[in-house]
Every structure is written in C-alpha cells, then in structure tokens.
Amino acid sequence: MSAEDKIKAAAEKAVGKAKEVVGEVVNNDKLVAEGKAEQAKGTARDAVEDVKDAFKK
Image (cartoon, rainbow, N blue to C red; front, side, top):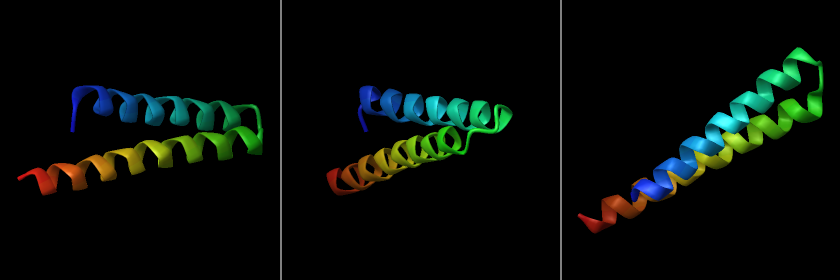
C-alpha cells in the first residue's frame, strides 16, 4: 500500500467519523449516515490495498 493510499484511507475515515459525530450532536440522521458511509469507504480502500499487497509478495 502506498503512502498516498494510506493517507487517503485515513482521511476518509477521519472525515467520516467527524461527520458522524456532528450528525449525532445536531440530530441529523442524514449526516450520520454520510459519515458512516465515508468511514466504510475508507475501510474498503484499506482492504483493497491489503489484497494488492498480499499478491505482490
């Protein structure tokens, strides 16, 4: 996994978590859902890169 991909994945997870927390504070279900989706996207990016790394070995 390249450093750039790691940074993108971490950023997606962080932004997603922030959206989720803000959505919970302001009681905005749509924002909570967007945050959770963004976190899932970051996690999926990590998983894809892990598979790529496994095949490189």
